Length: 325
Picture 1 (cartoon, rainbow, N blue to C red):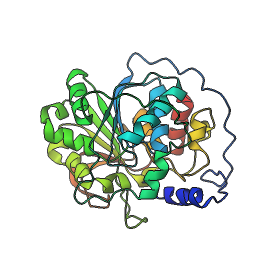
Picture 2 (cartoon, helix red, strand yellow):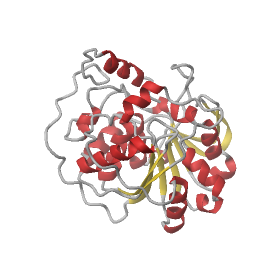
Picture 3 (cartoon, rainbow, N blue to C red):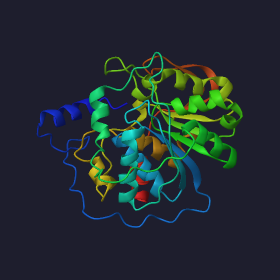
Picture 4 (cartoon, helix red, strand yellow):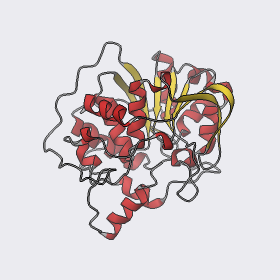
């Protein structure tokens, strides 16, 4: 995940005039000023989700998409602190995002931030750049957090909120800890939809995908057949994500996050759009038993319950963004 982010960070660090550009090389349209239009009303059967995120630039767009989409109710946000942005830096970023979206802040909880054994932490320049807020004005009080940590909040919601799906946009540390700490609560989840892993070898320091590499043991735990057979798991791997920036992101608020064209593709945004489109029920998802190595390379080992989406069509991302923004 995010192999292009390092180049963007170097542009900012060296003060190079890196022109905003979409994946096809065309300039990103100017960002309209002012607020977004009022969010669409929630559907009566809107899916209940918790967004587990490490608050990188593409995470913020995915979270905004889900918060505003009529087919989703975001019940809580948990911070995957083993990823790009930890709790201290993440709380003002969340406050700024929800302020600019003019949306109420759901319950927020922080996960453990210690990198586990065998992990490859995200490069320090990526973490530093993401902590700056990805274009948001961070002159705001941090969001409050609940008394429980992230696994504790997930356990409570899984028990009290039937039909809850966790949309995991960072390392899966919080989910693995929930499974270790409270197996019955973990099995109460309706599903896990994660942007993690790649079916293609890595190009960036050998890393196939950074969410997986930042905590490979956590992804392996979630993919374990004993757990995946009880809680449906869908993965959107990095190689399934289309390049380019959706035209619908040329909108107030989200346009400030999406420019100045720092990413050649929007991994977590595509993962959120795939959830909304129900892609696992369509052609292009391969079910099986999957394992991951330390760098996030996914390998299918036989029949099994985990769905790995092979491609997210660009139109799916565009349509989801248009519905929200």
